[in-house]
Structure formats: structure tokens, C-alpha cells
Image (cartoon, rainbow, N blue to C red; front, side, top):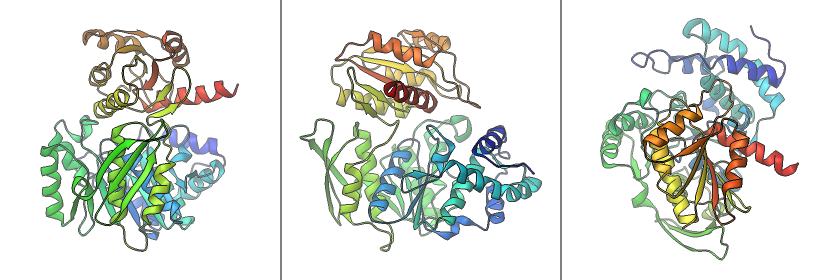
Length: 441
């Protein structure tokens, strides 16, 4: 049995599990995840949960729902992926990540269960282990509710062991096609797998072909669908605060009016989804509208259209698929009209680099392609990204060192331009950390 005494030990063990894989999709039915949780006394049954999936927007929606619940005095656990800076972020309560030493203690306590599961099903994966740790942490800390983000797809995702109070699908787009399928219908089928009998399924606006698949599956399992566009009407107006937008959301139950601090119209769609989720919760969990308003008006989402107010402004956004890149471009057009955009971009090897670059190139600007240094993750070489850009009729310089790439983009940018770091969670995390440290220094 592996000895886990420190957070460094825990990190080392988890990094070793990155190479572990699930059984083939044809036979893998969450057996290993269920077995691991049984060995841990099924911590997920100790509290009600909210289950949020989708191609894009799920992390933001999870954060909005969780902050509204916390504002209402509910002790709220949150599990999202990926993390920006530390594994501990994946097990947070009321916005506070589990302490590193407690993280190590939890993993050490889990080792007998991990070994017993490994003997029958193979060693649990990195993702399965982190998920089980988060669910265990929430049970030990006696949360009132947990808000859990789907990792990949839905039907066969480890989080699908949950029987939640409410489930939601925020969007359907092309991502992880090697696993989920290469059509919207195939991807929608996997996402729809989180639908469960009697559990409201909140569905944001999705392409018609995907909606048909989800509606059919929900009907087969007996999950009532709540269409966000029918349930929540959202209008926006200018706010006296130039960094915010006035948002007014109206439902059959309430009216929500607040200054929303996040850039991008797509975030206001996530607000509507979050409101629809909150209003479908059981009465004992459901926050008052004032709690949601309070939460939404002070929302902060690191790495998601995160604006650092300087000259020129610097934006961090983890647009790592085509849908997210298109949403980013729409947000930039809205927030920085007629400004030239200087992109600093790194992209993981499994992503649709051509699609992401093509989407980003729809606003005038420059590209500086770079890399990231994250254990277990492989970036596309910057020179290869530059070649892809050239094949699409655009151009970019290749600078492998991410910090130097950002410095070069800053030198090129005029005061009334904007700099955007994007393309990968890992480059955003690396440069966000570097920028914060350099600012302090």
C-alpha cells in the first residue's frame, strides 16, 4: 500500500494514475466508480446534489449555483474540473478549497478502498480518485448540498453515480469527439445520460438535432425537461458601472435584477440556466431570489473571461474548444468593440487547433503561439500551431516560453488594444500565476 503523509505524496500518487484508463466503452458501466464509493461507505448518499453537464458553460453555472446556495446559508460543496492551480480546488466548500494537508489525509484514508477496488477492477483513474476524494470530503464535513460538474460526457462519467435533486445540460458542441462521437447527435446522447427518472433536467438552448436526442432520452427514462428559454427571460441594459452589465431575469416565480460583473453574453445565458436550476430545487434547499442576486452581483470566475484592468487590458479565458472560442470572440466583440486583440495561445494535443484558431481569427489581431508545462499533458508545438494558422490564411509567431510570449504580446499592444490568453486551461493557469507573482514583485 502506498504511503501518503504529505500533500507532495498525494500529488505524486495522483500523477501516477493519469495513465490509468477506463475499461472499453462497450463494457464499462461505472462499475469501478461504484465499487470505489461502496468501499468508502457511499459518501455521495450523505447529502443532496446538483449535477451539471454540457460542452461549455457548466463550470460557470456550477459556480453561480453554488454561490447562490452559500449566500442562503447552505454549506455547499463544489466539485469542478479541471483545476487552475492546485488539485485541492476540486474539493471546495463555500468557496474554500480543501487544505493541502487535509487533502493528503483524505487520500491516505482512502488507500485501503483504492487498493481493494484495484484488485477487482484495476486502479481507479486520476479523475475517479479526485472525484471520490471530493465526495468523501463533503460527507465528512457534513455539507447541506453538493454541486458537481460532469467531467466528460455524462452517461459513463464517474459523476453519473449521483441521483441528484436537479440535473442540467448547459450546451452541446464539438469537443472530446474521440470519446463522445463526431456528430452532435452522438455527443448529445452521451450528455443526456445524466437524465434520471423523476429528476428535473434543466436544458439550455442547444442545436435542434441535439435537443431531439435529449428530449427522446429524457422521455424514455422519465426525466421532466425544463427548457431554460421558456422558464427564464433575460434582458440586459447598460450599467452605471462600466465593468458590469445590468441584468434583469424574470421567471414565473420571481424577478432578479442586478449588476453582473462578468464579461460576455454567454455568461448571462449561464445565469438563466443557474436560475432555472435553483428554482427547481426542493423547498428546503431553494434559496430566496435575494440570495441569488447577491451571489450573481459579486461573482468572480478565475480564468473565465477574467479581466485584469491594466493598459492594455489583459483577459484570461480557458477557451479550449471551438464552441468556447466562438463564445470568447462574441464576448470580445461586445466588450472591446473596434479594439485590436493580441492573442497568446497554447492548445492541447487532443483539441481541434484549426477550429479554435479559425474562430479566434474572426476579430482583427495578432497571434503569439506558445506552450505550457503541465505534467501529464502534452501541448501542440507552437511552430505547428503557426503552421496551422498559416494554412487558414492568418499568421502567428511561435514562442515556446509562455511568459516570454506574454511579454512579447504586451510589447506589441497599444494602450487601447487588448491582450487575451486562451486556448488551454493549462496556459491560462501558468500565465495567470506568473502574472500575479510578477505584479506582486
